[in-house]
Amino acid sequence: MTSPSRHLVRIPDSIDFATAAAVPLPATTAYQIVHDAAEVSADQTVLVLGAGGTVGTYVVQLAKKLGATVIGHATGDRLEHLESLGIDRTVDYRAHEFDDPALPGGPIREVDVVVDLIGGEYAVRAVPLTRRDGLVVGVPSGQQQGLGEAATSAGVRWTSLIVEPDHVALTYIADLIENGELEVTPPQVAPLEDVVDVHRKMAAGRMSKTVLKVNA
Ligand SMILES: NC(=O)c1ccc[n+]([C@@H]2O[C@H](COP(=O)([O-])OP(=O)(O)OC[C@H]3O[C@@H](n4cnc5c(N)ncnc54)[C@H](OP(=O)(O)O)[C@@H]3O)[C@@H](O)[C@H]2O)c1
Image 1 (cartoon, rainbow, N blue to C red):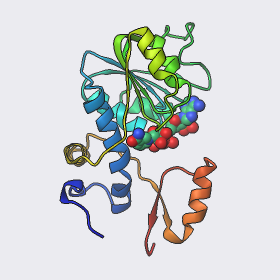
Image 2: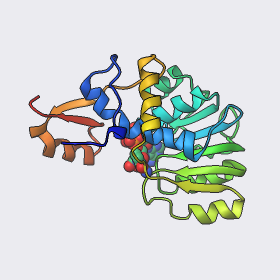
Image 3: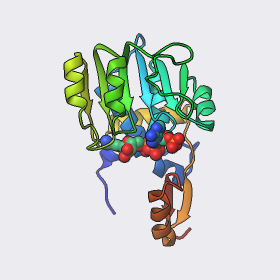
Image 4: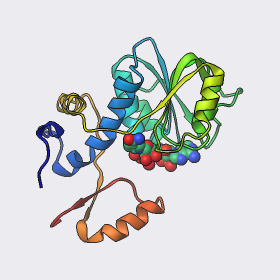
């Protein structure tokens, strides 16, 4: 197997090969959302829908690293995890709708950036919570139906992205991991022979991100 050298960086000493295999896709996606698409800055408020997921956890950390105020929408023990990562406010989606005007602690409004990692109607529902000229980033591929129309009529910018190999992002991420400044959750690991079972369980939502190990 070969790979362009610009797609590769040295694995930080603090993580093993399986963990390293699980980092580039979600962490590079998060980098390209936070640094490239949204150009998040310290004076901004970022709302992350699906904050407890793989990409979301990196988005929260990278936006906090830039000094932004971050609000995350998640549930269960992911809420505590996000709080341990320094998130400023969480909304438990099992208890409240994120766009509820009677949200405890006050309604979410006038955010600068929305990162939608869920899809469907979520990004459209976030438009009224976004300030004029703010930005909604729709990440799930092909799931931004209605977002362009809703955003344009509200004077809100919107975009979507497809992650690309990115040496600048990978280098930045590897440095943060090396310095203990980016938390990485080790993935589940299964032998390659289990590939069919792993895919079935993932499709049924019963298994999180899994690295398949050759000769495990
Ligand atoms: N465009 C690109 O280049 C690109 C790159 C990477 C990923 N993606 C896409 O980005 C999305 C997120 O990826 P990921 O790897 O972070 O996935 P993930 O680890 O499965 O996380 C998704 C998160 O969304 C939450 N969620 C799902 N449905 C929800 C709902 N109805 N209400 C509230 N929360 C909900 C889940 O919460 P629970 O855990 O509580 O269920 C989970 O925390 C996926 O659609 C993926 O395909 C796109």
